[in-house]
Length: 180
Image (cartoon, rainbow, N blue to C red; front, side, top):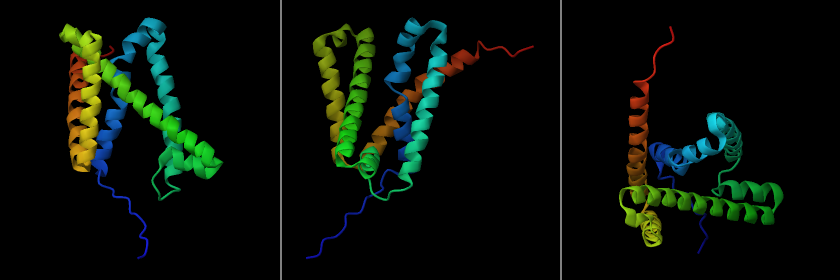
């Protein structure tokens, strides 16, 4: 029996990839961080977002360039392994895992806080735990059932994240007057 090289199935597609990127950008950083940052940095807070965005663009461009050199999957862990060896690659993989887990935790926390503003039970320790378990369990289930279900879920979350932002923009545009 000959060993066949596993082929990476590219089932997400361009639309699913766009949903993935939008959901990564629009989360706790958009819905919760601005109020905390405005409280701490005041009028400088918009400039901090701009500066952080420029730094992130440099990271994104670097990863885009690196990804063009590899056909295998593995992302940052693969790049670090090839450049610096297996220990650095392993460490990078764990850091990436911890950052993704932290992002899910942050988004679950914000979701529980927002639900707690509507229904006080969600602002309790039990309510908070229920939200986290339901969010993590649902995301796990969706990923187990397959890529198409995952893309549909991304579309759902993208829609419900973009709607409040579009409403906010629409309401804000009513208060902008053209320069004379």
